Length: 177
Length: 206
Ligand SMILES: [Zn+2]
Image 1 (tube, chains in turn brown, yellow):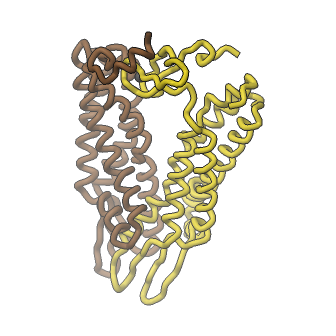
Image 2 (cartoon, chains in turn blue, purple):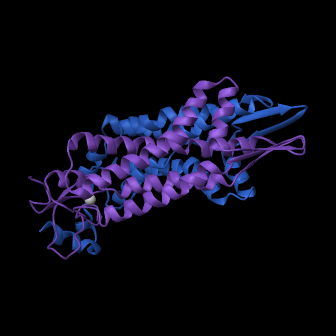
Image 3 (cartoon, chains in turn red, yellow):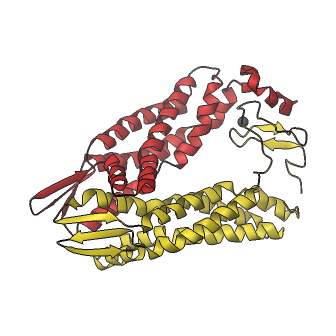
């Protein structure tokens, strides 16, 4: 297994732990006149949903939770499959998704959004950053590192061709001949 | 001009394998990953134009309608995107005000102008300084996601400030149009085929 792949696998495993942490702990908390409140990543989407903004809620849930989670899961599956000398053909489907899932993972945009809203709310109440926001901060560093250490071309070069793997792609061999 | 299409070759969009094109009129598939092969994305110009026009239509209510409504001790205040920028500026955090201004106003508008410009050039069939145009397209693709910033700012401000009856923040109707502008411009860039820039340089009108 090439060293780039094992480094990438270690980074992906770390990112999965951090994404779970970011989703299960509060991002920030607020206190004013004896009242306290805090929010998680999911709560941002849930509140938008309750306040009659289902589209904004869906975008937040997708870009902040679903796409990053699916991206890391897909990466873990691909990296695991790539440990074999010949990479099975089903990997190609997942490998194709990773590009889109990564493009729609807006972790860094969310982090900046959280910081801006912290500053805005600081006008009204006392605010504090919690564990979740630090986990999000670490993820904004890990995502580009995972992509930088991931050699997709190397995996593609070892992947089993669908044209040989199943008959459905017979059309593909026409294109090749 | 020599191009893969002239040589009867086509690169796979998914895995970048260079494949032999299918006979004309037939759909080719990549033998390695199974992706449908397109020498150029189908109806790239029409789809991009449609999405850009839809985004321009949403851009007006996105900026005119309030995105946040703050209820504090019985008084209500509506804020548009620009209003939010002014509030940040007045509170002394001008770097953040500038970031929000760039992400929410300059980037979406710049994207719409840049994409319309590229599409018009490609349609005229003559593109000058192709390399710069391709670079412009890459920049548009990369910075587009940052315009989602305000959706996150509003969502987490709303999620945090729910202290009824003392103080609460609700999303305004502008937010859905704003999110639509961002998604539509990202899709418009996705449908636009940068290879058309190079076709137009060679004088091949698509
Ligand atoms: Zn392919």
